[in-house]
Amino acid sequence: MLEEQLKKRFNEIDTISFIVGKKILRAMQKNKLEYSHFAGSSGYGYDDSGREVIERIYADVFKTEDALVRPQLMSGTHALTVSFFGNLRPGDTLLSVVGKPYDTLLSVIGIREASGSLKEFGINYRQVDLLSTNEIDFEGIKNSIDTTTKMVTIQRSKGYSTRPTLSVAQIDEIIKVVKSVRANIICLVDNCYGEFVEEMEPSEVGADLVVGSLIKNPGGGLCESGGYIVGKKKFVEAAASRLTAPGLGKEVGATLGTNKNVLHGLFLAPEVVANALKGAIFAAAEFEKLGFNTIPKWNEQRSDIVQAIDLKTSENVIAFCEGIQQAAPVDSFVKPIPWEMPGYDVPVIMAAGAFVQGSSIELSADAPIKPPYTVFFQGGLTTYHAKIGITIALESVKRSMKQ
Ligand SMILES: *Cc1c(COP(=O)(O)O)cnc(C)c1O
Image (cartoon, rainbow, N blue to C red; front, side, top):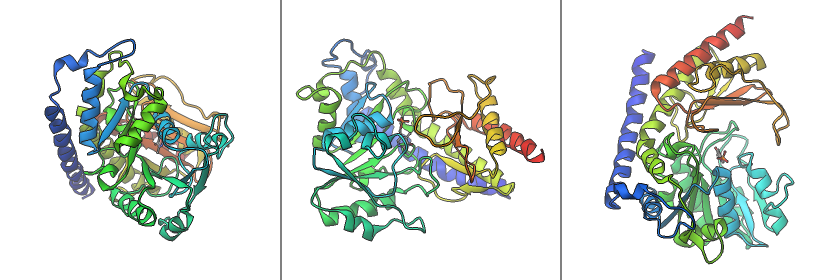
């Protein structure tokens, strides 16, 4: 019975991956991608035709005026940082509309004291939390916008919190409300973990800037480093001026042989995202059978690849992460242990055995050791690996429960 229902869900996922895959293929054909684009550049990186074609392809896939896709964007956090600093000026306010942003951004914004934060440069921050029902506080958003509000930041994925992920339809609603107050407020979407899960991207429903990491969904597991920023030309250019230098903008930046993997990874990404989603759904179904609370449930709509499971005890969390680690192709013999990570108030455990360091489109799991002992896991380049990893993690948790 469950098998049948899972199959139906998997078919829905394959339908989306087919549509997105076709969109990416067309963008590559339209921009006349050719073998010579893989050559790349050194030094200043002037006239790097491969880099330029990558950015045109990204702009077409996300249906935006412009794109900045670079190995010099070191992570999702860096791509977001460059987007903020490039577009905000002293006295402006950045407004987060779905609660506290992803952990690493706390230092960037200055919510957590850090040298060089937006706060140090006189850029203000305000936040609208979700309602106690986890619904979006549209009234609160309207009331929090004032004349200094220059940018609204919308985080699509729940990240490592247990609120629901925003669907593209919900992002659409938020943007409509913000623009109804003042049309020139820049709406930025942190799209990390969300790419290609739905047919449409936030840039297709009015987002001015959409930002993410190439070692998550859009890199398809092949991209070894980098980030992307897509959106309205003037906002992308402002970010580029900050990444390189004012006056240089997008014109410089050697790609150092990365072009092929960026494109090859993008080509595979819809399939890889589908595999990660199937793994997440399989895991949710299996852990629900054992009586654990999952976010989202196996049969709920998804807009990112992250699966959260409340495992009830720290022993179960550790057992789960050990299982995921044992299933890894790299570092399978390593035993993950909780440690005091900078910026966290409790020990955190992480399981990852990836070909690309920190790549969380590959099967990986993380958990802060605190009630309700939620483990967050994501990725799986292939369905077979996701299934193997989850099955080992499941057996490991079952053993831990018996003790
Ligand atoms: C991963 C992630 C980031 C930061 O990306 P890094 O590449 O780890 O710096 C930001 N926001 C969300 C929602 C994420 O999932």
